Image (tube, rainbow, N blue to C red; front, side):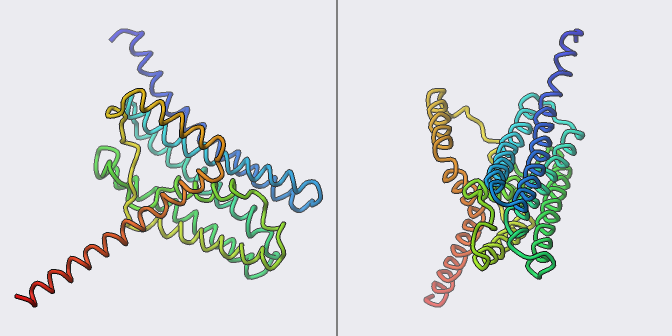
Length: 286
């Protein structure tokens, strides 16, 4: 192999790492903006408007990180530059961007200011943010172990076991983007109620991440079956909808994916139950 080709090959290995580094930067950016927004809430007055903007910036950063996380793995597979270091670096980036950043955002935007410091609600807020983070880290660790056992990067290219942590983070980010005003702007009783509901959401997302419910995987999906015209039109339409109606489209997509696995599991259980009843009915008739 010539020196030029070896140099090109080495350069290809940097491309997925660049996307992973961007993922880390976006997670760091989201954490900083969440903390700045929380500080602005304490200052009150006109600073509250700045807090809304900073919370929205944090949510947008997490949303962009979801896209970058999908691209780095796809590019690594396309260029055949997947490495063990890259896999581990990607997992550590996901802990920051989709674990710590959403947990901090949920706390600063939601129940952190809704409950008085030292109250039961305040302590439970800490707890549920921590549980979300721990379950997200466990989800990543389980995925890595399964990938190592499979020997090909993923045990099943068609589905994930448990809700992927980027999807869980996407639900929180989409919710904040939909209504970036912090809970502190509401009446105290309403703010506390919303705080408890947000804790319930984080608990549900944590449970889905460590569950055995299967979710569809789109990372291995190709575009060979689509013509260039159809692909371009589809991407253009999706981009236009997100550009003009990002709050509704992103929240609907995030919640829809999170509920997809639960709905599929319930439907599968219902089909098995109906099938069992039919078999039993046939046995009795015979």
